[in-house]
Image (cartoon, rainbow, N blue to C red; front, side, top):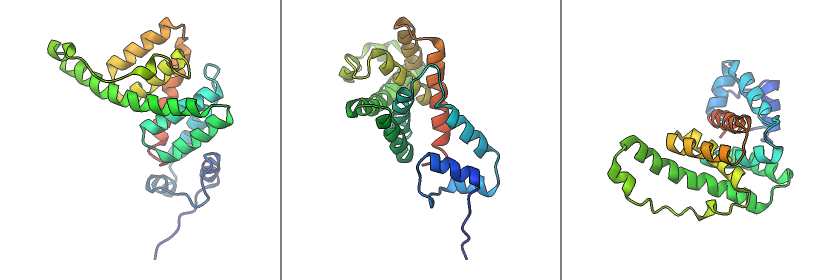
Length: 197
């Protein structure tokens, strides 16, 4: 006979915040809840704190969230952040650009990580032949597009891309605290995507 796990009030409150149905469950969430893991409280606090930033607007947090959820292939979080982005006034083309940025950077991160790992002049001489026209005149603005690019690249572990986007952001006048906040958000969303999916 199968038993149904009842989530704690705190966990249910977190799921309500994510706008998930009352019967929502995942194997990893069940495991953590069943073991009364204190990590769930940390995860909830980390995620909620991500929305309180003096360096990122709520709309920027939501658009970064869309890109990072797409990068994690997480439909639940993508839906959540898409709703938040629209609620914060994001236009459909801005949400689409966050999705496009995540997709483009996934390609770039694989490609430039390979070049970096190999560190072979021949591979650096061969043209990339990866179209990146979206980077020329981004709908969300050059600085914010670079910020999304950096956050996705940090998650994907591409040193060349992270270094390049960070340098571009500094050149564009971004504060290091703003850059740091975007990477912290990327870390938190990546951790949440292992539990809510």
